[in-house]
Amino acid sequence: MPSYQDKRPTMTAFDNSGRDAIPGSREWILYHRSLLRDCMVDLRLNAKIAKTTYEDIKIYGGWQYLENTRKRPFHSFDEFCRDMNGLGVERAEFERRLTAQEQARIESPAADVGVNQHTRGVDNVNSSDGNSVRYLVRRLKRDRPDIAERLVNGEFKSARAAAIVAGIIHPPTALSILQGGWKRATAAERKQFLAWIDSK
View 1 (cartoon, one colour):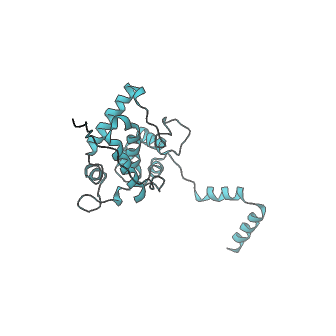
View 2: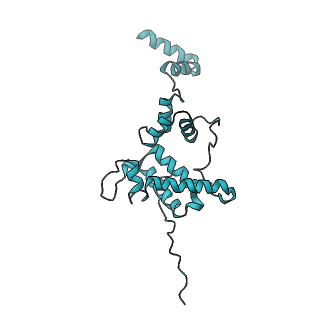
C-alpha cells in the first residue's frame, strides 16, 4: 500500500546572506522576498513574521531591483505583489489574509508562538524608542495618515524620511552639529578651530 504523501508546499531553502544587508538593497530584498514566500506556505503559523516582513518591504522597498516574469523591472509595489517573481498574490488579497490571521491571533493569543528578530521591537506608539521604524510608522498612521499612505506607495526612501516631512523627526541643523562638536572637542582642537576661522 503506497504511503501518504503530503502535497502541500514546503518551506524552501534560500541564501541567508542578505539578512543583514542594507535595508532596501538588492541583497536585502532577495532575502526578505524569500522569507515572506516561506511564511506564506502557512500563514497560520507565521503570521507575525509575515506581517513584519511585509511591512519592512513596503517601507524600505528594494523590489525595484528585481524583474517580473517578463524580465522587466517592477514599476510598482502592487505589481511586485501580483507577479509570480514577486509574491504571486494580489496586494489586497495578501493584506486581507494577514488581517484575518492577525484577528485570529488576537482572538487566540496562545496560537501565536512565532517570534524572531523581526518581531522584537516597539509595539506601543508611546514607546521611548523614537527612532524605531515600527514606532515611526505607527506615529505616521496615527498623526499623518496621508504621509503614511505615501510611504506605503514608495514616495519615501525610509520611514525616517517620511517622519521628517511629517514633522515627527526634527533633523539636527548645521548649527546644532557645530555646537555639539565644540562641546566634544578638546582644548587643542578648539584652538585649532578658532585659528581656522580667523584664517577665513
